[in-house]
Image 1 (cartoon, rainbow, N blue to C red):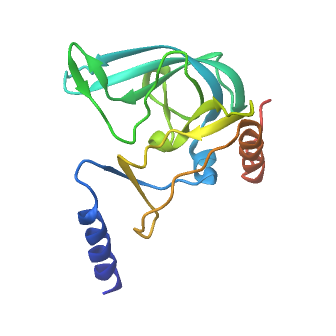
Image 2 (cartoon, helix red, strand yellow):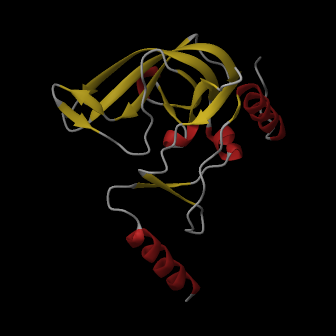
Length: 187
């Protein structure tokens, strides 16, 4: 009975969401650290969108020059693959999935993907844009767009996206979380 009530509640929540929105399970910083092979700060060197082998899906590969390997062992340049992009006048826009722009500085939680590439853990939840505030402090700004994608906690209630933090504070908290999880820090 309890399971049926929970299913009905989750169904009601999902039916009340906008049709154009994507829905994701909320991931905490602890979840992102646990699920990531590495966490890097870097700059997007270039992007390349292409059709997958079956010609049904557009994918985008971003080359990211690593400025700081915050957690894990990683190359100096990583390929980060995501769903969506534009090829030959066809665009696939995937709400809640990472988007990359050349020269953009990012902090990324990365998981292994095929062919030596990586993907962002937690979809766009594992992508932070690095921006400078009015006082000159570098900030880690969540890329997750709450207006076009919805986060739900594990009980089916709507969750809040992460907040912007000073970059140095955020990197220190990631390293601390990794230590608490028993992850060895390579740097």
